Image (cartoon, rainbow, N blue to C red):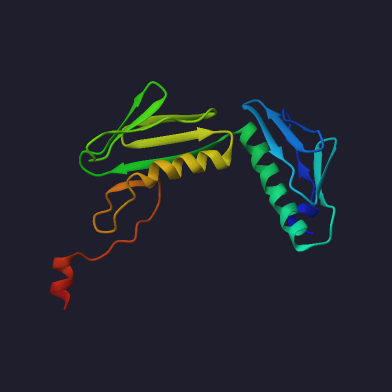
Length: 181
């Protein structure tokens, strides 16, 4: 069995976890999430703890049990605290503004890029930072990656959209490269 699946998952106070056989419903102060149970996995709730066990003795059952533990822990963390990704805009003329709920990016293209956040995701712009937050960890990461993909940081000057604290590997330019040889 997965090492993570051997230990019971602690359900924090204020969070309710229920199971209907095919899906697990996790509800908390920030909202509720539904997780579809993977095959070869059984889910049990006992008091303030939840337990994931595998129903078969195969490699796929082992993988699914570890995945379900990670998904359940992320859901519990999401409905209690939520998740946030912070992106930074770097470059002359690059701007991010809000148009109602939609994010409008001016990245040097002919037309501005409009990003409509899906249900449950909020986007906030402060100076040159874009904050993407929500209760679903996968969806927050997916939207942040989509925004970053519009203008990835280039390796010579570092212009573009990057995560807060992300280290961009820099390359030597033409002049510096020619002077060294």
